[in-house]
Length: 502
Image (cartoon, rainbow, N blue to C red; front, top):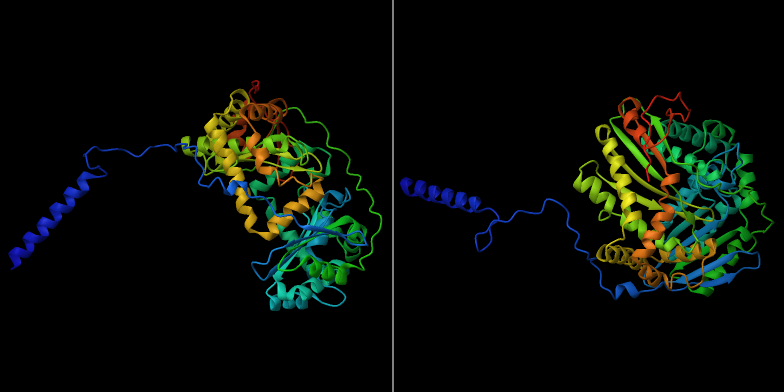
Protein backbone atom coordinates (compact mmCIF):
# COMPACT_ATOMS: atom_id res chain seq x y z
CA UNK A 1 0.00 0.00 0.00
CA UNK A 2 2.81 2.33 0.94
CA UNK A 3 4.64 1.48 -2.28
CA UNK A 4 1.55 2.39 -4.38
CA UNK A 5 1.22 5.67 -2.49
CA UNK A 6 4.87 6.59 -3.16
CA UNK A 7 4.55 5.68 -6.84
CA UNK A 8 1.41 7.85 -7.15
CA UNK A 9 3.18 10.86 -5.58
CA UNK A 10 6.16 10.36 -7.90
CA UNK A 11 3.85 10.35 -10.92
CA UNK A 12 2.17 13.54 -9.79
CA UNK A 13 5.54 15.25 -9.31
CA UNK A 14 6.68 14.25 -12.80
CA UNK A 15 3.40 15.48 -14.31
CA UNK A 16 3.73 18.85 -12.52
CA UNK A 17 7.33 19.23 -13.65
CA UNK A 18 6.31 18.48 -17.23
CA UNK A 19 3.56 21.06 -17.20
CA UNK A 20 5.90 23.66 -15.68
CA UNK A 21 8.54 22.98 -18.32
CA UNK A 22 6.03 23.68 -21.07
CA UNK A 23 5.62 27.31 -19.88
CA UNK A 24 3.32 29.49 -21.94
CA UNK A 25 3.36 27.30 -25.03
CA UNK A 26 0.40 27.29 -27.35
CA UNK A 27 -1.27 24.31 -28.94
CA UNK A 28 1.40 24.17 -31.62
CA UNK A 29 4.17 24.12 -29.02
CA UNK A 30 5.72 27.44 -30.15
CA UNK A 31 6.97 29.57 -27.26
CA UNK A 32 6.12 33.32 -27.36
CA UNK A 33 7.49 36.01 -25.05
CA UNK A 34 5.39 38.86 -23.76
CA UNK A 35 6.28 42.23 -25.24
CA UNK A 36 8.80 44.15 -23.15
CA UNK A 37 7.28 47.57 -23.90
CA UNK A 38 3.81 49.04 -23.88
CA UNK A 39 2.24 48.83 -27.32
CA UNK A 40 -0.11 51.53 -28.62
CA UNK A 41 -3.25 49.87 -29.95
CA UNK A 42 -4.91 53.16 -30.97
CA UNK A 43 -8.17 52.12 -29.39
CA UNK A 44 -10.20 53.63 -26.58
CA UNK A 45 -12.64 51.41 -24.66
CA UNK A 46 -15.76 53.45 -25.35
CA UNK A 47 -18.79 53.09 -27.57
CA UNK A 48 -18.98 55.81 -30.22
CA UNK A 49 -22.61 56.49 -29.34
CA UNK A 50 -21.55 57.59 -25.87
CA UNK A 51 -19.39 60.29 -27.43
CA UNK A 52 -22.50 61.98 -28.86
CA UNK A 53 -24.03 62.70 -25.45
CA UNK A 54 -24.47 66.40 -24.65
CA UNK A 55 -24.90 68.19 -21.37
CA UNK A 56 -28.45 69.08 -20.38
CA UNK A 57 -28.94 72.83 -19.98
CA UNK A 58 -29.87 74.39 -16.64
CA UNK A 59 -32.56 77.00 -16.30
CA UNK A 60 -31.19 80.47 -15.61
CA UNK A 61 -32.93 82.84 -13.22
CA UNK A 62 -31.84 86.38 -12.34
CA UNK A 63 -32.86 87.48 -8.86
CA UNK A 64 -33.74 91.15 -8.19
CA UNK A 65 -30.60 91.58 -6.05
CA UNK A 66 -28.35 90.64 -9.00
CA UNK A 67 -27.67 87.01 -8.10
CA UNK A 68 -27.45 84.69 -11.10
CA UNK A 69 -29.11 81.35 -10.37
CA UNK A 70 -28.62 78.19 -12.47
CA UNK A 71 -30.98 75.28 -11.76
CA UNK A 72 -30.42 71.81 -13.16
CA UNK A 73 -33.23 69.36 -12.42
CA UNK A 74 -32.09 65.77 -11.89
CA UNK A 75 -34.67 63.53 -10.23
CA UNK A 76 -32.96 60.14 -10.40
CA UNK A 77 -31.65 60.44 -6.83
CA UNK A 78 -33.16 62.27 -3.83
CA UNK A 79 -30.13 64.56 -3.44
CA UNK A 80 -29.35 68.23 -3.91
CA UNK A 81 -26.17 70.21 -4.56
CA UNK A 82 -25.58 73.92 -3.98
CA UNK A 83 -22.56 75.62 -5.51
CA UNK A 84 -21.81 79.29 -4.94
CA UNK A 85 -18.99 80.99 -6.85
CA UNK A 86 -17.86 84.35 -5.51
CA UNK A 87 -15.98 86.05 -8.34
CA UNK A 88 -13.20 87.28 -6.06
CA UNK A 89 -10.51 85.18 -4.46
CA UNK A 90 -6.77 84.95 -3.97
CA UNK A 91 -5.96 87.30 -6.86
CA UNK A 92 -7.87 89.99 -4.97
CA UNK A 93 -5.61 89.71 -1.92
CA UNK A 94 -3.79 92.94 -0.99
CA UNK A 95 -0.16 92.65 -2.08
CA UNK A 96 1.03 92.80 1.53
CA UNK A 97 -1.60 90.33 2.75
CA UNK A 98 -1.31 87.09 0.74
CA UNK A 99 -3.81 84.51 1.96
CA UNK A 100 -6.58 86.86 3.08
CA UNK A 101 -9.13 85.31 0.70
CA UNK A 102 -8.00 81.83 1.73
CA UNK A 103 -8.22 82.61 5.45
CA UNK A 104 -11.71 84.04 4.96
CA UNK A 105 -12.97 80.97 3.09
CA UNK A 106 -11.33 78.53 5.51
CA UNK A 107 -12.93 80.12 8.57
CA UNK A 108 -16.43 80.71 7.20
CA UNK A 109 -18.00 77.74 8.99
CA UNK A 110 -16.37 78.43 12.35
CA UNK A 111 -19.23 80.51 13.69
CA UNK A 112 -22.06 82.96 12.99
CA UNK A 113 -24.26 85.16 15.14
CA UNK A 114 -26.72 82.23 15.47
CA UNK A 115 -24.44 79.16 15.49
CA UNK A 116 -20.99 78.36 16.79
CA UNK A 117 -18.67 75.94 15.00
CA UNK A 118 -19.87 72.96 17.04
CA UNK A 119 -23.52 73.68 16.29
CA UNK A 120 -22.79 74.03 12.58
CA UNK A 121 -20.91 70.73 12.52
CA UNK A 122 -23.65 68.98 14.51
CA UNK A 123 -26.46 70.22 12.27
CA UNK A 124 -24.60 69.19 9.13
CA UNK A 125 -23.91 65.73 10.60
CA UNK A 126 -27.55 65.26 11.54
CA UNK A 127 -28.53 66.04 7.95
CA UNK A 128 -25.82 63.79 6.52
CA UNK A 129 -24.72 66.89 4.59
CA UNK A 130 -21.41 68.37 3.51
CA UNK A 131 -20.14 71.94 3.41
CA UNK A 132 -16.87 73.17 1.92
CA UNK A 133 -15.35 76.54 1.09
CA UNK A 134 -12.09 77.37 -0.61
CA UNK A 135 -10.19 80.23 -2.26
CA UNK A 136 -7.27 78.58 -3.99
CA UNK A 137 -4.11 80.41 -4.97
CA UNK A 138 -3.67 81.29 -8.62
CA UNK A 139 -7.41 81.88 -9.08
CA UNK A 140 -9.82 84.71 -8.39
CA UNK A 141 -12.68 82.46 -7.30
CA UNK A 142 -14.03 81.62 -3.87
CA UNK A 143 -16.08 78.42 -4.09
CA UNK A 144 -18.65 77.43 -1.48
CA UNK A 145 -20.48 74.12 -1.82
CA UNK A 146 -23.05 72.15 0.16
CA UNK A 147 -24.81 68.88 -0.60
CA UNK A 148 -27.27 66.55 1.07
CA UNK A 149 -30.66 64.90 0.71
CA UNK A 150 -33.29 66.89 -1.16
CA UNK A 151 -35.73 66.47 1.73
CA UNK A 152 -33.27 68.54 3.81
CA UNK A 153 -32.79 71.24 1.16
CA UNK A 154 -34.54 73.95 3.18
CA UNK A 155 -32.48 73.30 6.30
CA UNK A 156 -29.27 73.01 4.31
CA UNK A 157 -29.85 76.33 2.54
CA UNK A 158 -30.64 77.90 5.93
CA UNK A 159 -27.22 76.80 7.24
CA UNK A 160 -25.37 77.72 4.07
CA UNK A 161 -26.87 81.19 3.81
CA UNK A 162 -26.21 81.85 7.50
CA UNK A 163 -22.55 80.95 7.02
CA UNK A 164 -22.11 83.06 3.88
CA UNK A 165 -23.95 86.14 5.15
CA UNK A 166 -23.25 86.08 8.86
CA UNK A 167 -19.88 84.42 9.53
CA UNK A 168 -18.26 86.34 12.40
CA UNK A 169 -14.82 84.67 12.49
CA UNK A 170 -14.54 84.17 16.29
CA UNK A 171 -11.16 85.13 17.74
CA UNK A 172 -10.67 81.78 19.52
CA UNK A 173 -11.31 79.84 16.31
CA UNK A 174 -8.94 82.13 14.41
CA UNK A 175 -6.21 81.53 16.98
CA UNK A 176 -6.56 77.76 16.61
CA UNK A 177 -6.46 78.14 12.85
CA UNK A 178 -3.31 80.28 13.02
CA UNK A 179 -1.52 77.61 15.07
CA UNK A 180 -2.54 74.84 12.69
CA UNK A 181 -1.85 76.86 9.55
CA UNK A 182 1.50 78.00 10.93
CA UNK A 183 2.56 74.38 11.37
CA UNK A 184 1.35 73.58 7.86
CA UNK A 185 3.31 76.47 6.37
CA UNK A 186 6.45 75.27 8.11
CA UNK A 187 5.92 71.72 6.87
CA UNK A 188 5.13 72.97 3.39
CA UNK A 189 8.66 74.28 2.91
CA UNK A 190 9.98 70.73 3.32
CA UNK A 191 7.80 69.51 0.44
CA UNK A 192 9.76 69.46 -2.85
CA UNK A 193 6.55 69.42 -4.90
CA UNK A 194 5.41 72.69 -3.34
CA UNK A 195 8.85 74.28 -3.73
CA UNK A 196 8.79 73.40 -7.44
CA UNK A 197 5.27 74.80 -7.97
CA UNK A 198 6.10 77.97 -6.05
CA UNK A 199 9.25 78.70 -8.04
CA UNK A 200 7.57 77.85 -11.36
CA UNK A 201 4.64 80.21 -10.67
CA UNK A 202 7.05 83.01 -9.84
CA UNK A 203 9.11 82.34 -12.95
CA UNK A 204 6.05 82.36 -15.22
CA UNK A 205 3.97 85.18 -13.68
CA UNK A 206 6.55 87.58 -12.27
CA UNK A 207 4.73 90.38 -10.43
CA UNK A 208 1.23 89.19 -11.39
CA UNK A 209 -0.74 87.90 -8.33
CA UNK A 210 -0.95 84.35 -9.75
CA UNK A 211 2.75 84.07 -8.87
CA UNK A 212 1.75 83.79 -5.21
CA UNK A 213 1.11 80.20 -4.16
CA UNK A 214 0.89 80.42 -0.38
CA UNK A 215 0.34 82.72 2.59
CA UNK A 216 3.36 83.92 4.52
CA UNK A 217 3.93 83.64 8.25
CA UNK A 218 3.64 87.42 8.50
CA UNK A 219 0.30 87.52 6.68
CA UNK A 220 -1.01 84.72 8.88
CA UNK A 221 -0.08 86.73 11.99
CA UNK A 222 -1.87 89.78 10.54
CA UNK A 223 -5.14 87.87 10.15
CA UNK A 224 -7.87 89.21 12.44
CA UNK A 225 -11.65 88.86 12.64
CA UNK A 226 -11.93 92.44 11.36
CA UNK A 227 -9.69 91.75 8.34
CA UNK A 228 -11.65 88.63 7.39
CA UNK A 229 -14.99 90.38 7.80
CA UNK A 230 -13.64 93.22 5.68
CA UNK A 231 -12.80 90.89 2.79
CA UNK A 232 -16.18 89.16 3.07
CA UNK A 233 -18.11 92.43 3.17
CA UNK A 234 -16.11 93.86 0.26
CA UNK A 235 -16.42 90.96 -2.18
CA UNK A 236 -19.23 88.63 -1.08
CA UNK A 237 -22.20 90.20 -2.87
CA UNK A 238 -25.01 88.75 -5.01
CA UNK A 239 -23.98 90.83 -8.02
CA UNK A 240 -20.51 89.27 -7.72
CA UNK A 241 -21.71 85.68 -7.52
CA UNK A 242 -23.19 82.72 -9.38
CA UNK A 243 -25.29 80.14 -7.53
CA UNK A 244 -26.04 76.70 -8.93
CA UNK A 245 -28.63 74.23 -7.67
CA UNK A 246 -28.57 70.69 -9.05
CA UNK A 247 -30.60 67.66 -8.08
CA UNK A 248 -34.06 66.63 -7.00
CA UNK A 249 -35.71 70.07 -6.98
CA UNK A 250 -37.79 71.77 -9.63
CA UNK A 251 -36.83 75.19 -10.97
CA UNK A 252 -39.75 76.72 -9.07
CA UNK A 253 -38.77 75.01 -5.80
CA UNK A 254 -35.12 76.03 -6.13
CA UNK A 255 -35.99 79.62 -6.99
CA UNK A 256 -38.36 79.89 -4.04
CA UNK A 257 -35.75 78.41 -1.69
CA UNK A 258 -32.95 80.70 -2.83
CA UNK A 259 -35.20 83.75 -2.71
CA UNK A 260 -36.24 82.84 0.84
CA UNK A 261 -32.70 82.68 2.17
CA UNK A 262 -30.62 84.87 -0.16
CA UNK A 263 -33.19 87.27 -1.55
CA UNK A 264 -32.35 89.84 1.15
CA UNK A 265 -28.61 89.65 0.40
CA UNK A 266 -27.68 93.23 -0.48
CA UNK A 267 -25.75 94.05 -3.64
CA UNK A 268 -23.14 96.79 -3.85
CA UNK A 269 -20.50 97.96 -6.33
CA UNK A 270 -17.44 95.72 -6.43
CA UNK A 271 -14.14 97.51 -6.55
CA UNK A 272 -11.77 96.24 -9.24
CA UNK A 273 -8.95 94.22 -7.76
CA UNK A 274 -6.25 96.15 -9.63
CA UNK A 275 -4.23 93.01 -10.25
CA UNK A 276 -2.76 94.35 -13.48
CA UNK A 277 -1.87 92.30 -16.54
CA UNK A 278 0.35 89.31 -17.11
CA UNK A 279 3.61 90.45 -18.66
CA UNK A 280 5.00 88.78 -21.75
CA UNK A 281 6.88 85.51 -21.27
CA UNK A 282 10.36 85.74 -19.79
CA UNK A 283 13.45 84.45 -21.56
CA UNK A 284 14.25 80.77 -21.10
CA UNK A 285 15.90 80.03 -17.77
CA UNK A 286 16.65 77.23 -15.31
CA UNK A 287 15.84 77.60 -11.61
CA UNK A 288 17.60 75.24 -9.20
CA UNK A 289 16.09 75.05 -5.71
CA UNK A 290 18.67 73.53 -3.41
CA UNK A 291 17.33 70.87 -1.08
CA UNK A 292 20.44 69.32 0.53
CA UNK A 293 20.28 65.58 1.06
CA UNK A 294 17.43 65.05 -1.41
CA UNK A 295 17.74 61.74 -3.25
CA UNK A 296 15.58 62.80 -6.16
CA UNK A 297 14.87 65.80 -8.37
CA UNK A 298 11.42 67.33 -8.88
CA UNK A 299 11.30 68.75 -12.38
CA UNK A 300 8.81 71.23 -13.88
CA UNK A 301 9.15 72.70 -17.36
CA UNK A 302 6.74 74.96 -19.21
CA UNK A 303 5.48 78.51 -19.52
CA UNK A 304 2.45 80.71 -20.11
CA UNK A 305 -0.53 79.34 -22.01
CA UNK A 306 -3.77 81.24 -22.69
CA UNK A 307 -7.09 82.48 -21.39
CA UNK A 308 -9.88 79.96 -20.96
CA UNK A 309 -12.03 81.62 -23.63
CA UNK A 310 -9.24 81.59 -26.24
CA UNK A 311 -10.15 79.58 -29.38
CA UNK A 312 -6.84 77.74 -29.04
CA UNK A 313 -7.88 76.22 -25.71
CA UNK A 314 -9.50 73.06 -27.11
CA UNK A 315 -6.62 72.28 -29.50
CA UNK A 316 -4.23 72.85 -26.59
CA UNK A 317 -6.14 70.28 -24.52
CA UNK A 318 -5.70 67.76 -27.34
CA UNK A 319 -2.00 68.54 -27.66
CA UNK A 320 -1.55 68.13 -23.92
CA UNK A 321 -3.33 64.78 -23.92
CA UNK A 322 -0.86 63.50 -26.51
CA UNK A 323 2.16 64.83 -24.66
CA UNK A 324 1.44 64.06 -21.02
CA UNK A 325 -2.27 63.91 -20.27
CA UNK A 326 -2.30 60.36 -18.91
CA UNK A 327 -0.58 57.02 -18.58
CA UNK A 328 -0.89 56.38 -22.33
CA UNK A 329 0.72 59.70 -23.27
CA UNK A 330 4.22 60.21 -24.57
CA UNK A 331 5.94 61.46 -21.42
CA UNK A 332 4.72 58.51 -19.34
CA UNK A 333 5.58 55.99 -22.06
CA UNK A 334 9.05 57.44 -22.51
CA UNK A 335 10.27 58.31 -19.02
CA UNK A 336 8.58 55.47 -17.16
CA UNK A 337 7.87 52.59 -19.50
CA UNK A 338 10.91 52.85 -21.77
CA UNK A 339 13.58 54.50 -19.63
CA UNK A 340 12.44 53.49 -16.13
CA UNK A 341 13.43 56.92 -14.79
CA UNK A 342 10.28 57.62 -12.76
CA UNK A 343 6.95 56.36 -11.50
CA UNK A 344 5.13 58.95 -13.57
CA UNK A 345 5.58 61.87 -15.97
CA UNK A 346 2.71 64.12 -16.98
CA UNK A 347 1.78 67.52 -18.38
CA UNK A 348 -1.19 69.81 -17.83
CA UNK A 349 -2.64 73.04 -19.17
CA UNK A 350 -4.81 75.65 -17.51
CA UNK A 351 -6.68 78.74 -18.62
CA UNK A 352 -8.44 81.41 -16.59
CA UNK A 353 -9.63 84.99 -17.06
CA UNK A 354 -5.88 85.62 -17.22
CA UNK A 355 -3.43 83.46 -19.17
CA UNK A 356 -2.91 80.08 -17.54
CA UNK A 357 0.12 77.85 -17.82
CA UNK A 358 1.46 74.81 -19.63
CA UNK A 359 3.75 72.58 -17.55
CA UNK A 360 5.29 69.12 -17.68
CA UNK A 361 6.41 67.46 -14.46
CA UNK A 362 8.18 64.40 -13.14
CA UNK A 363 10.18 63.24 -10.09
CA UNK A 364 13.34 61.24 -10.73
CA UNK A 365 16.48 59.93 -9.03
CA UNK A 366 19.43 62.31 -8.89
CA UNK A 367 21.44 60.05 -11.19
CA UNK A 368 18.95 60.38 -14.04
CA UNK A 369 18.15 64.10 -13.73
CA UNK A 370 20.19 64.85 -16.86
CA UNK A 371 18.61 61.99 -18.81
CA UNK A 372 15.11 63.00 -17.75
CA UNK A 373 15.60 66.62 -18.83
CA UNK A 374 17.00 65.34 -22.12
CA UNK A 375 13.89 63.21 -22.72
CA UNK A 376 11.55 66.07 -21.76
CA UNK A 377 13.27 68.26 -24.33
CA UNK A 378 13.14 65.45 -26.87
CA UNK A 379 9.37 65.07 -26.47
CA UNK A 380 8.83 68.84 -26.61
CA UNK A 381 10.79 69.05 -29.86
CA UNK A 382 9.17 65.95 -31.35
CA UNK A 383 5.70 67.40 -30.88
CA UNK A 384 6.83 70.69 -32.42
CA UNK A 385 8.76 69.19 -35.33
CA UNK A 386 6.76 66.10 -36.31
CA UNK A 387 3.09 65.68 -37.09
CA UNK A 388 1.23 63.35 -34.75
CA UNK A 389 0.33 60.01 -36.40
CA UNK A 390 -3.36 59.73 -37.18
CA UNK A 391 -3.94 56.72 -34.92
CA UNK A 392 -2.36 58.37 -31.89
CA UNK A 393 -4.29 61.58 -32.49
CA UNK A 394 -7.62 59.78 -32.81
CA UNK A 395 -6.96 57.75 -29.67
CA UNK A 396 -6.23 60.91 -27.70
CA UNK A 397 -9.36 62.66 -28.94
CA UNK A 398 -11.54 59.65 -28.09
CA UNK A 399 -10.04 59.58 -24.61
CA UNK A 400 -10.86 63.25 -24.00
CA UNK A 401 -14.43 62.96 -25.24
CA UNK A 402 -15.10 59.72 -23.40
CA UNK A 403 -13.99 61.34 -20.14
CA UNK A 404 -16.33 64.22 -20.93
CA UNK A 405 -19.20 61.78 -21.55
CA UNK A 406 -18.58 59.99 -18.26
CA UNK A 407 -18.69 63.32 -16.39
CA UNK A 408 -22.38 63.58 -17.30
CA UNK A 409 -23.17 61.11 -14.52
CA UNK A 410 -22.70 63.85 -11.90
CA UNK A 411 -25.32 66.63 -11.68
CA UNK A 412 -22.79 68.72 -9.73
CA UNK A 413 -20.21 68.26 -12.47
CA UNK A 414 -22.71 69.21 -15.16
CA UNK A 415 -23.90 72.37 -13.46
CA UNK A 416 -20.32 73.39 -12.59
CA UNK A 417 -19.56 73.16 -16.30
CA UNK A 418 -22.31 75.66 -17.02
CA UNK A 419 -21.09 77.89 -14.19
CA UNK A 420 -17.73 77.93 -15.96
CA UNK A 421 -19.49 79.08 -19.14
CA UNK A 422 -20.92 82.06 -17.25
CA UNK A 423 -17.72 82.86 -15.37
CA UNK A 424 -15.28 82.63 -18.28
CA UNK A 425 -17.63 84.20 -20.83
CA UNK A 426 -17.88 81.17 -23.08
CA UNK A 427 -20.68 80.77 -25.63
CA UNK A 428 -24.02 79.52 -24.31
CA UNK A 429 -23.77 76.45 -26.55
CA UNK A 430 -20.15 75.71 -25.64
CA UNK A 431 -20.73 72.23 -24.23
CA UNK A 432 -23.20 71.36 -27.01
CA UNK A 433 -20.35 71.53 -29.52
CA UNK A 434 -17.45 70.47 -27.30
CA UNK A 435 -17.17 66.93 -28.71
CA UNK A 436 -17.40 68.23 -32.27
CA UNK A 437 -14.68 70.79 -31.62
CA UNK A 438 -12.39 68.11 -30.18
CA UNK A 439 -13.04 65.94 -33.24
CA UNK A 440 -12.08 68.76 -35.60
CA UNK A 441 -8.53 69.05 -34.25
CA UNK A 442 -6.17 67.64 -36.85
CA UNK A 443 -2.42 66.93 -36.94
CA UNK A 444 -1.61 70.30 -38.53
CA UNK A 445 -3.45 72.09 -35.74
CA UNK A 446 -1.67 70.10 -33.03
CA UNK A 447 1.70 70.99 -34.54
CA UNK A 448 0.76 74.67 -34.78
CA UNK A 449 -0.36 74.70 -31.15
CA UNK A 450 2.79 72.87 -30.02
CA UNK A 451 5.03 75.37 -31.77
CA UNK A 452 3.13 78.25 -30.21
CA UNK A 453 2.75 77.08 -26.61
CA UNK A 454 5.78 74.82 -26.15
CA UNK A 455 7.86 77.96 -26.48
CA UNK A 456 11.47 76.84 -26.16
CA UNK A 457 12.77 80.44 -26.30
CA UNK A 458 10.77 81.17 -23.14
CA UNK A 459 10.78 77.77 -21.46
CA UNK A 460 11.01 77.95 -17.67
CA UNK A 461 12.66 74.90 -16.07
CA UNK A 462 12.55 74.33 -12.32
CA UNK A 463 14.52 71.58 -10.61
CA UNK A 464 14.25 70.97 -6.86
CA UNK A 465 16.99 68.72 -5.54
CA UNK A 466 20.44 68.47 -3.99
CA UNK A 467 22.40 71.13 -5.84
CA UNK A 468 25.72 69.35 -5.29
CA UNK A 469 24.34 66.28 -7.05
CA UNK A 470 22.48 67.90 -9.96
CA UNK A 471 23.96 71.37 -10.54
CA UNK A 472 26.19 70.23 -13.40
CA UNK A 473 23.33 68.30 -15.05
CA UNK A 474 20.82 71.16 -15.00
CA UNK A 475 23.45 73.62 -16.20
CA UNK A 476 23.32 71.94 -19.60
CA UNK A 477 19.81 73.23 -20.22
CA UNK A 478 20.07 76.97 -19.69
CA UNK A 479 21.29 79.81 -17.52
CA UNK A 480 20.87 78.68 -13.92
CA UNK A 481 19.68 80.75 -10.99
CA UNK A 482 19.86 79.03 -7.63
CA UNK A 483 17.56 79.41 -4.61
CA UNK A 484 17.35 77.92 -1.15
CA UNK A 485 14.24 76.19 0.25
CA UNK A 486 13.04 79.48 1.76
CA UNK A 487 12.88 81.06 -1.69
CA UNK A 488 15.98 83.21 -1.27
CA UNK A 489 18.42 83.61 -4.17
CA UNK A 490 21.88 82.23 -3.45
CA UNK A 491 25.24 82.96 -5.01
CA UNK A 492 25.55 81.58 -8.50
CA UNK A 493 27.73 78.50 -8.98
CA UNK A 494 29.87 77.87 -12.04
CA UNK A 495 28.18 75.69 -14.61
CA UNK A 496 28.79 74.52 -18.12
CA UNK A 497 27.63 76.82 -20.87
CA UNK A 498 24.12 75.97 -21.92
CA UNK A 499 23.46 74.76 -25.46
CA UNK A 500 20.63 76.09 -27.57
CA UNK A 501 17.42 74.23 -26.60
CA UNK A 502 15.77 74.73 -29.97
